[in-house]
Amino acid sequence: MKKNQKDIKYYGEFLNNKILFSITQLILILVLCFFHSSCRMSYSFTGTEVPATAKTFSVKYFSNNASLVHPMLSQTLTDKLKDQLQSQTNLGLTNADGDLAYEGEITGYTLQPVAISENDAAQLTQLTVTINVRFFNKIEPENNFETSFSRFQQFSSSQSLSAVEDALIDQITDELIEDIFNKSLVNW
Image (cartoon, rainbow, N blue to C red; front, side, top):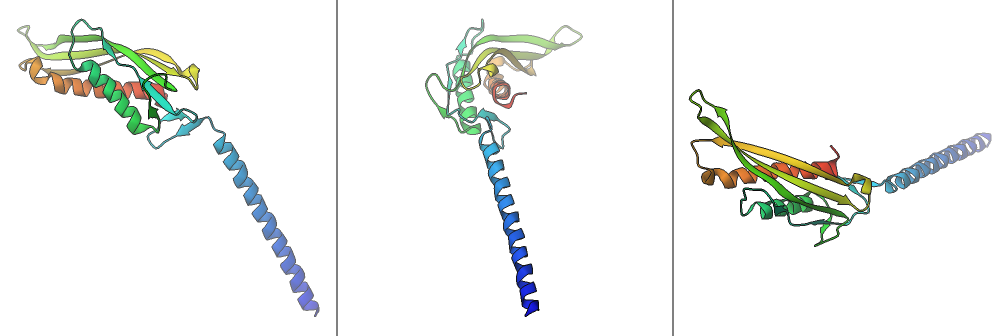
């Protein structure tokens, strides 16, 4: 009989310790959930840092103010920025006044010879596109910026610009969009 009472006492202490341990785990989990839900930033697998309360973005048409103009550059740049934001964030596109808003203009579209040979002929030509971007973050205005971005691609001077221009613009705009996206949402 004494053995049963001893076993029951031991079993009671074991249950009390197990319950205390379970309550401690529950409190720890609740504390972690509280701190996690109160974070200001929302993280994704793409490395973006979008404010948790941001729901929308807007992109104004990038007008072309360069002295040389490619007719589709403005539309291509604007559309690619919208596509990048839609595919890499959970934000919804709105026509104006998004929680995150982008606007700007193309300020440069230049061609210049590079890699001059010994007979003063250019072996390569470089196409450079420069844009000015303004980013407005309604949730965290301290992250607003206005920045100029510039990217280029080179092509053989034996090719005509019209033969390679669309492919070059496609590459350059991809790089510019990546720069804008990184500056506004990856904080590099």
